[in-house]
Amino acid sequence: MSDISHTLFTPGPTKVPDVVLQAIARPPLHHRSDEFRELITRVSGHLQYLFQTTGPVLVLTCSGTGAMEATFVNLFSSGERVLVISNGKFSDRWVQMPGIFGLDVVEIKLDWGKSPTSSLMRNVLLAHSDVSAVYLTHCETSTGATTDIKTLSRIVHDNSDALVCVDGVSSVGALEFRFDAWGIDVAVTASQKALMCPPGLACVALSDRALRKIKSSDLPKYYLNLSEALSAHDHGSTPWTPAVSLVAGLDAALAMIRNEEITNVWNRHRTIGTLTRQGIVQAGFKIFPECPSDSVTVASVPSSVLTNNFLNKLKTEKGMILGRGQGKFKDKLIRVGHMGYYFREDINALLNAITAVLLE
Figure 1 (cartoon, rainbow, N blue to C red):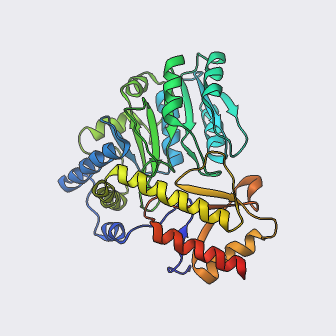
Figure 2: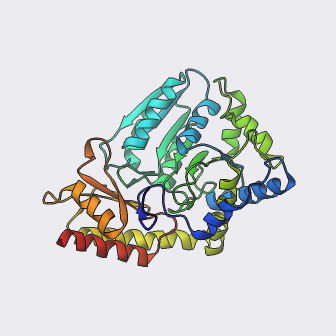
Figure 3: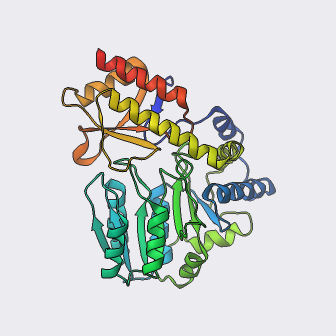
């Protein structure tokens, strides 16, 4: 059994506050009771505040990947074309997934660590103006690269009729995100990142345009049927048995975010993101992405440092767990998660521990 004194600085799961753990530990509600209807209705309102939208935000019992799958099978019909900007492991997943369901995928592949530019987006849409949707990853968790969703969403709408679909799994609740004001049509996030909960829940926000597309989709779906989820949502319920205790934890976490106020949450992440990058660079690492995120810091390991030894010592001697690189960068990168329940003192403690391990 792992030592519970270890502190997670991974890109997910992240730290869970005591008040959230206490909410999860209470006896579960029956999911068809009036009490649960009150709970899920309150959570839905909190989620609208989180996403900054007046539209519906659905809670699904699955991972972020499950919610992304739900967007593909509910919004489109066989043979429709979707465009995906791929610049890391998770956006690569969004390239692979729709083809399995019979969609035509246009992949715009960037090097890991790169972010799509305005000019690239315009040029791509000139060549592929018939796509039904553009999929963008706000923060690519594998590389720490961010995408300017606000600007690119405007460019998509100015140059096509495509839906703007956003993977916000490691951004919503940490980075500035304004669903309605930015013209986003679909956005997905998950409980184990900036929402300060254990894994097991995902959230999907939908615009009016997306709701209309759902009605015309002909792809098969059952458990991830968003039409069923929307119908249940209107009655303060879910179509299937939800992870009731996790929903109670999410309620507590979202109340914390609402009490802090979302703009203050964004500012806090901006502060600790800057602090983390500055400290990591001072310790001899190099920031990997060209447009780094304030939710996860990804850095190249100095040639003089053995990644495995460094991460193991940080865990066993300092009680702090970082993420390692993925794919071909497995032994070349470290990934520091600081989304959710992290503050300046947490980052300072981590940076001091990193410095001490490197000196040893």
